[in-house]
Length: 296
Image (cartoon, rainbow, N blue to C red; front, top):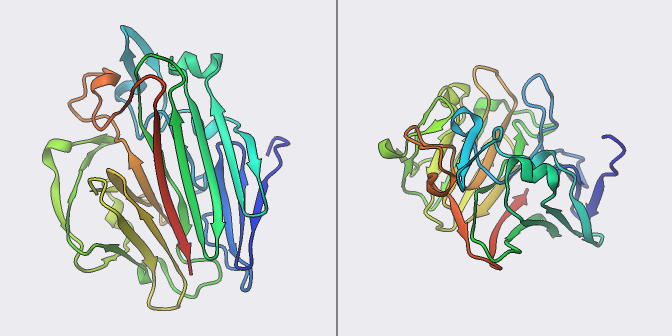
């Protein structure tokens, strides 16, 4: 880990590990059974656990964008996932970490920012809160997202990938944003009936993620199997939620991803200020995002 000490949070039910590199959640274990819920970053499939996506979500066309007349280059999901955060507050069950702009980030993204991530264990639930603060008087534009990956099957489970379901509540028909290659096609959203659970199959992801439009309504997405009593439930009020597993790899994990942003649209102009689903923050203002994951 390059000498960076892992952060451990623990209560009566769960033990959680977080890496200050990227403020990344790397492990959630059930204390009684030792069951591991989080994907363990096997590079044969995907070498990350739960990266934080900032200041973009997804991919930019040609990995570049324009802001204030200048062109900048930035790779998929931005740089926060590869930067070391500073611990600003920690107890046995809670930690807050912070990332601020510096010369390296400004070469990729010229805006000043303070990105704070906090994780708090409460019984069987992990509460995750993010704040993006604009410390300047000038408006800023950005996207934010989370990308937690969960073992399927969960560690020690007897079930197979295809025994698992994704249940979305409220049960309704959602608008799904198709992806054309890595880009969003927001003008051609299609209905996805989720009155019934979505049965997991690897080819569900043959066109990349399933991207649901949530319109900031509180939504709970549960990953579980009839084969045992274990699962996770992620609750969030975000504009979008991605469900992803790499295809054609037969990868034993699924990501449930709350997004306050999208990959560039197929018709993107390259201008960050008019990017699809971009967040805008006035000078001295703050943006807040949160979600909760319950482990059972």
